[in-house]
Every structure is written in structure tokens, then in C-alpha cells.
Amino acid sequence: MAEKRLPGSAPADASPADASLADDLRWCESLTERHSMSFHFAFRRLPLEKAQAVWAVYAFCRLFDDAVDTPVEPEAFEILCMQWRRYRGGETPNSHMWRALRWASGRFGLDEAPFRELVDGLASDRDFRQPEDDAALYRYCHRMAGTVGLMLLPILATHGREALRETAVRLGDAMQLTSILRDVGEDLRMGRIYLSAARMEEAGVTASDLATGQASAAFRALWEGYAKTAESWYEEFLGSVRLYDADSRKSLRVSAKVYRAILQEVRRHGYDCLKRRNSVPKWRKCLVALGG
Image (cartoon, rainbow, N blue to C red):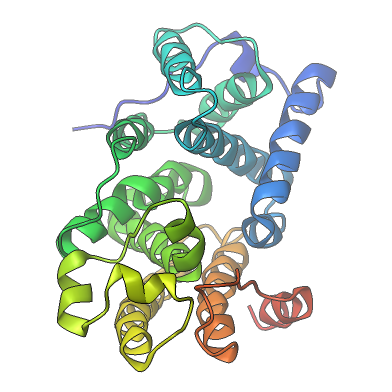
């Protein structure tokens, strides 16, 4: 059965050269660069229209994600969900993101299902509970980022899309798991632990242990177990890159390798992801890009 597409309309037929649409797309790119320099670094190398469509998709994901994490504006998520329903009905809410997404959908025929799954997943994440086991954690990774891989697939793979669905999900899953491993301490300070309760108990690591800010041997072993899983997912994805559009392959390789390098940065800093946020230096990203 063919995937249902996000609705296109007159604004989707506009050219990015149109002043108002160009402004919308620049806004989406600025948002992307501000919130994820690694993501922006990788995908800015795409042909212009593909990059602009990626920024529009990222803006959708970022605005919804931020609305869930903004307790001072509890109505923000409901407002976005209302706009989402209007958008699916053919209206275009008056904002940079929605206009840019309308254009991207019309230009690349974006599938509706992963957008809907992300919104549903974020809605359930508002009542956060630590994942009970790894199966629950990996389902979370899929809802939050595996879906993003599917959102981007029509932009990056013009043909043979069905054969790439599984590895597109794998890249998103790997990136989400990497973000969790990078942000263990930051998430803990927000009252959240994404590492599964079962795996923590098996490793002999408690929430109190994490709160000390010290990367114990037990924590390092726990962290490495998850890191090895993320790295295997990156490898699985990289084995499929040759099947994507030729003009998209380098960006995809760079995105996978730059995100994977975050794991190496955590290791280089003695697994200090409990007190600091580790990131890949720009010079290292450039080296990755040169070898991409």
C-alpha cells in the first residue's frame, strides 16, 4: 500500500527564490544550526533544495520537541497539535515552519506517517517514565528519531525507497541513542533517566550513583554496552549509503560519522557525560567531512 503523503497545495509550488518562502527557509536553517551544529554541518552539503527541505523537517521536529520540554508554556504543545491537524486538513498555519514544510512536502512528496508517529510519541513522552527495559528504550529511540530517518527518506532517496526504510530508521535510532549517551547528566538534572531500569540494575548502577557525577567502572561498562549498539547501527546504515541518491551520499556519511564521533568524545573525556556535554570540535568534523 502506498504511503499517505503530506498534503501539498499552492504554496508548495512556489520556488525557494520567492522572497517570502526564502525567508521561511532561512528561518528553518537558522533554527537547525542553532540547535544542532552537527546536523547542520552534515546536511548543508546537500544540493540547495534538498538542504532546504531537510531544514524544514528539522524545524518541525524541533518545535514539537521543545514544546514538550517547556513547562512554563504547557499550552504550546496543544497549539502545535491543533496547527498540525489544520495542516493535515490542507490549511497552512501562518508561521515560517508550516509554510516551509508545505513547500518541502509539495517538492519531495513527504510521507505523513512518520510525522504523525513522532507527534504521537512526543505526546506520550509528556508523562515521562524511565524505560523498563532495552526494548522500551529502543522503541523510544524509534519514535523520537527513527521516524526522522523516514521523514528525510523521500528527500535523500529518489528511487528504491522501500529497500532503504530499515536502515534509514537505523540512522535515526543510532543518533537518538548517541544523544542519550551524551546527555546522561543533563537529562538527570531534568529528572529523566533514559537508560533502561533493567540494564542499570544488571550493571549495578543506581540513580544515586549517576547523581554523584562520577563515572564509575560500572557506569562505564553500562555506557559502553549501549555505545556498541549505537555503533553497530551506524555501521548497518553506512553499508546502505550507496543506494541513496548520489548527491546525498556524502552528507549521509558525514552525518553518521560526526554523530558517531560524539561517542569517541565522551570516551576521550573519561566518560564524563554526567557533568559536561561533550561535542565534536569543528576541526574534527572537518576531518570527518574530508574523509566522508
